[in-house]
Image (cartoon, rainbow, N blue to C red):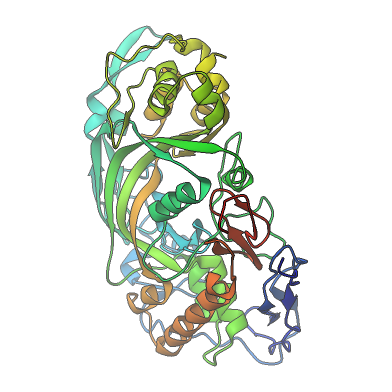
Length: 502
């Protein structure tokens, strides 16, 4: 057995000078040694800040020339946007002391869920970050997005009449959104895959949510002791993906059933991007001299990458944890177990390698969708059900989590129209968004940001973990290394195995 290795953090760096525009100073520390093989984990944050009294004056980094400067953020906007009836500055300083002027744009409603595509993205945590695009900025433009589903008849129960949703015919397109197209509601149908062990399942999930960036992400604990949380997290559900690692020593299989619903496609502006005002201020506050602590904190706040295009909609999947011994004892197959569960939802499920035949007997199943999946011989083979949901409103997600049924699935699908998630997207590294703005004198900061991103990715890379025995795969979770063991192996380093010859 390999000896436990405790996590070790560096000493705090020296405090930076007091930044005049913020009245704050900063310090940081790094992960010298991630914990391994069950060693003691690190606690606390990697970044720290403190208020201070500046000795110098706040120098504005952007020269607006003849343009208007927003009072709070210092962002420059064109003079024709002043007193146009719209707040082109978040603090509305551009609309102060103006005559009563109303916006000439008739489209007042924002695109549903548009803020989600404006977020940064951290590929280590697989989570959205703070806003990078200013999604409330229209630049004086009145561009609309046509919603083809507005013609669907709706029923007003109070007045007892049918009507068209005219108020949902058009939505206003923000300046930073180059293209947005609503799609007719359609799902991909339910498909199913079977995995012999937890490692294969985890690899498949990582493949769905990872990019070719040369890293291996881990499974996040409920609360990571170190501020950076790396890995997968479920926003809802009766189980988490961390549970899967607990099943590795048992004779279990996993059935993963999923469907994807697309509601819209989008493409973001590629040039003259207007940054969210918080990000703009944070960027202006970064020093031109390289300081890894401050730049890495910026990356931790706004993400390692940002979205350039993608698809809106929702994803619903569940993972059935199957007891192989019980399944064989009940003379069931993985097809029948999955189909029984699907029947309770009123869905037809097909495996990649073999489609479930319509003549399949459901004698062991309950088809009553209103009662969910009954306790039958098929159900007895299921040790756990792990649902995962992207998109939808809170109520519809709650219905799915309480018990999957055909009605719950329909409610969720309908809710995606106004509550979509970003389900597929293309990314660019966060330093590139600086290049694509029209801001001046930022080349030094852009290069520093790129350098810090490389260091940030290295500091939390799974290459710092391992070795793992018996073909286990090392993963890094915050500042903790774990070994993802193959079936039949267990222990902090996958050192214990019941397989012969190991």
